[in-house]
Image (cartoon, rainbow, N blue to C red):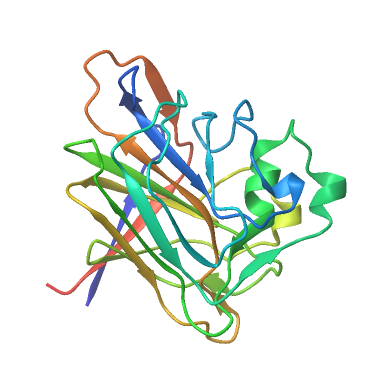
Length: 225
């Protein structure tokens, strides 16, 4: 297996004006883990996140886009449990979407989380994965996205101490097609498979009306060539 590291420093992704971003928040039912329609989160600060509402296994048949319009995309996810930090009720408010996004996630207690998205309305798309955890040190496990393995490049950090999304707690898989299929590896000591949410971003941008700054985010691709 050969590892390839690709830096995305200084790159901006462009998206068209309509239906260009679909965002999903793996949340418990706590009020401050649920993103309201007007609350922005993620690298691109888009609104209308689709909240999973506390179910460790479930589905949303019509995902909303960044404008609140229903799309043809539908998601099914599976995990053995959800995890959430009750302190979110004190330190994450509706004005801090990224704090709310971090506070709840699919847990890896007995088995790694998986999810799939069908009916994606974009011919070519990018996926942003947002990880979160209640402890620092160690790492997040590799994640399989449509059969290719990716991983974050830095040690994981406690969600409460994070000030931004970076290459310790997030990654981008670019130029995907068809359905989205995601699986993680089982928990191993301080290597965790805990995901707070994800975004699907239209890679084709005829109007280039939305720019997504990815800062110093990097990808680590592993393939079996």
